[in-house]
Amino acid sequence: MTARFPLMIPLEEARTYVLDRCSRKEPIFTPVNDAFGLVTAVDVIAKESIPPFANTAMDGFAVRSSDVAVVPVQLRIIETIAAGYAPKLVVGTGEASRIMTGAPIPEGADAVVMVEKVSVKGDAVTIETAVQAGNHIRPAGDDVTSGQLVFAQGTVLTAGHLGVLCSLGMSEIATYPRLRVGVMSTGDELVDDCGPLAPGQIRDSNRCTLVSLLNGDGFVAVDLGLIPDDETAIESALLHGADRCDAIVTSGGVSMGDFDYVKAVLDRVGDMRWMQIAIKPAKPLAFGTIGHTPVFGLPGNPVSSMVSYELFARPGLRTMMGFPEPIRTVIQGIAAEPLTRHPDGKTHYSRVLARYEDGRIRVRSVAGQGSHMLTSMARSNALAVLPNGDGCREGDVVDLLLLN
Ligand code: AMP
Ligand code: MG
Image (cartoon, rainbow, N blue to C red):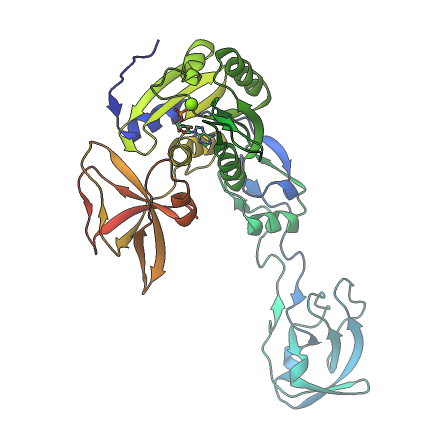
């Protein structure tokens, strides 16, 4: 059973509790084309070199540098080498091969003169500029040598990483799997069609915001629907979700109200802790596990659910996906105006607009800080972390979570 009035606990304590129960999934082989944003589960060792052969960085003529030490000099053109073809002839003294960017350097040649520095007449080329050995040649293994450690375990794969894997001829890579995260809204007042609202009804916005946050963070969101405030319905939706998904995010039903059944059900079918966290918004959180499936019971107020996602669900899910830094890095900005608040024992996460101006990140509050006022989320791009107290004055340094 959970205590009816638990003490408020600091954010770090609540988050440690959550992260301790979010274990990394077993690695799998993932096609490189699907691996964007995933985390490598092993060290990647190159089995090939990049580039695989010495080639030219310029369109021009492959020459012997000793032939072009004194210029101008005329050389005989013996062949044309296009990218994708192997040279057939050896470049001898007094000879040159016409060569296109990316084509292999022919035997005998040790430099390339770019086409802009020559004049051609029939099968003769006049070189106008002296070049050194190695000029415009990209040696084999210039970027990666076979046998080298390319990326360590725990690398977050970006487009650049994936390009390197393709260059190495790898079609799949051992990563932590992309999580499937179920999302459900709970509440009898909610509707999810566009028809007229009956008295007391409001429209469900949390499922859309949470699905978008999850997909934007590289998880696969699974819509588990809109569930009424009914213990049996919530229980079967949670069990069904735990079956199909790696984790579940719910919203609503974790406060102190008479019909807040999510925490009651989680307490019964899972191993759940209900926390009151010393933050505003997003004070209540029910976190539990059903079997091995973590369930994040986020508060229902639209802003609270998004802030709770940022502070608890996102770090927990990133931990499960093997991210070395699951928690967003706090950066610092300068308050361009006072960011006021009142002492209440909580850390406030205020919606702000952070803009890069005159070499600094300057922070301004957005209007409508109520946890039901979702337009403040739409107009902001960051949360300012305001410790318990009166807020900060213009010019003060302020901690920020830059959301987008
Ligand atoms: P609860 O956490 O269930 O007590 O809900 C707190 C507040 O958030 C209430 O005003 C609810 O109507 C509202 N709310 C709960 N779920 C949603 C939702 N999915 N979309 C929009 N508002 C919601
Ligand atoms: Mg509710």
